[in-house]
Image (cartoon, rainbow, N blue to C red; front, side, top):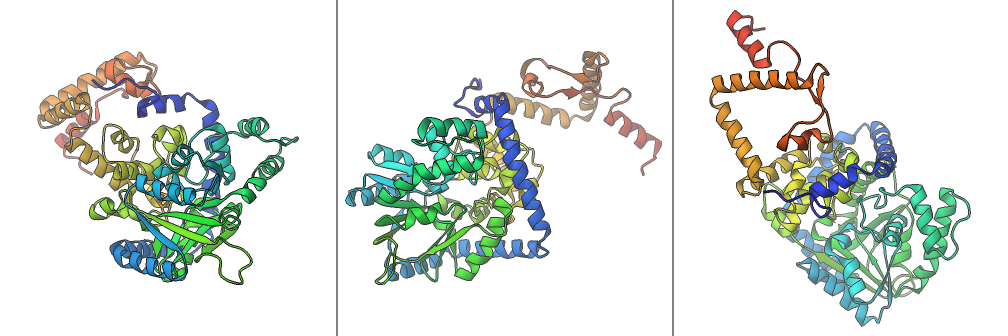
Length: 479
Ligand code: SF4
């Protein structure tokens, strides 16, 4: 028997999300704008297809030669004065970061947005260590005040309406905004965060790219919060997945064009910084210590898995989720993991393992293919999702009812006469049940899962498709 839907499983989370009208408004506002802006800027880029192909080639080349580029990156980062740490697991990565903070006697750390940080559970690890964590990305700040998790990899607070944010700021900021404008609310957050930027002992950032031939860490933000996180504190820690490498700064520039256009529909982000080593003699600012934590956490496993390996190309632009009809209905929290949407549905089982908890994600897909069309590195997301479905079936993770139902259907499909008879009876029974309304509101038993949220059109009057096809063949009118 399958588990009852609860907020802890995918069904329960999805039902909760679908019942939330405010969530739908918030998603439509942000994702709709993102889609329109991306379409406009890609439309003005005649070489987009070529750039996408180059982007895919660069990422594939790096992934195929990961050992070489990791060694080169480490050599150059160390030569520039950085300390490079290697973490095989999420726990190890958190331990390394917390140890550096403890050695520095840090009581407060600032953090700029990093999905890897969420993936490894860094916010929780810092809290457990008694270290104050200040999220400096505006959306992450909102999510932290609300005690929630990000719901989108680019817009972590996309599930919040302006009214909800205004209310949060009024409750948590010492000098909140007086006017209900976006500018006034941003100023309220700036007043709240500025003093915290200056008193932080350690700044923790993610990395958009790691540049192998210079040992640099590249970050991009629109708010400048990464620079405020990495420059004033005495210590800067950058955490990065090992797949973030590009061979040179020129390759990083090519990937940045794809990333920014796909993510926000802009030509450039406001701030793009290459962090190379700590502060040198004569530098006006910068950290005294620069630590780079290179995190595996399942990526080597993905590298060894030929079928899922293309997912290592992902540059975390979020375009696939903005264009996904399922994500646009249920939002990011319903996916239950760090990474939502189509990329999350592929990545979560790859990182956490395929299980009863993660198998549902691959099924939350209509296989319409929009995600692949907009992916700037051409990841075949629908194919990978089908791959997880196949594995889930082989490993016996599908509910017994589904297995039995499909087995019955397969059996009927190998008995054409019976299949035709069954289809004709079912069509007539559904037509009768519709009672001339043209649609069916609720179906009984397990079929209710389908009609709970949607109408089922009644079969049209007249012969069924199979009957028409048989008739056509009989009359020899193949066109
Ligand atoms: S899968 Fe493609 S579209 Fe989705 S986040 Fe990754 S790079 Fe962007």
